[in-house]
Length: 246
Image 1: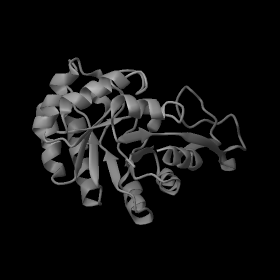
Image 2: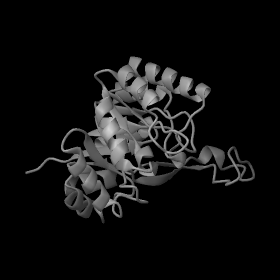
Image 3: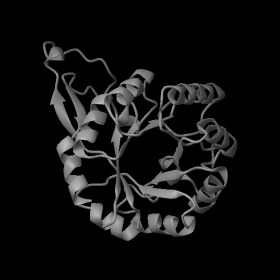
Image 4: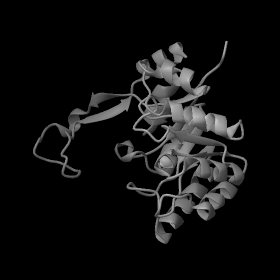
């Protein structure tokens, strides 16, 4: 029977532990998933490696809002990447584009060299590139190992046909991993339509922390004002159901 690799998108060490319990094969470790995932703290990586046996792909993304970074932001990304590798990251997840959305080859090449024999993953920045074929060809030439994509659609279900085209175009030279909006309802359709043997999933449940509930007039974040006594964690039971389905 075909073996499918289940990667879970995590925003904390608690998420990593819940993903592992649910049967994940590896995790992508981030911070700030509300903004699509930013670089995790070094402490989060250290704890994840100490408490879990799963391979950890560490995000390298210095800020939200696009993928064309200033020199200072890129220097931050390089410093983060070096620190993550030194602390045991099994791979790096990154994406660098020029202002017109084309691949920033120089910066991508530098991250590939820095990662060495660790896994190099180009994330969904490819989904906003004006020509995914050209981008994919350049990533192959640069030595990137895997691409995470929704097929340039809002989610992988609607982008499944393009993801299949990416797989055919790649011809095994780079791994194509569907991600974005994957659920139990569309999982089989995505895998069947794309022909991929790996999948990227995120499913959360809300928990309550009563320590911040005493004064509901206090907010610590931005103008959205979410409840301060609640937070999201990976739904381990849901991940287990995905693993069983795979």
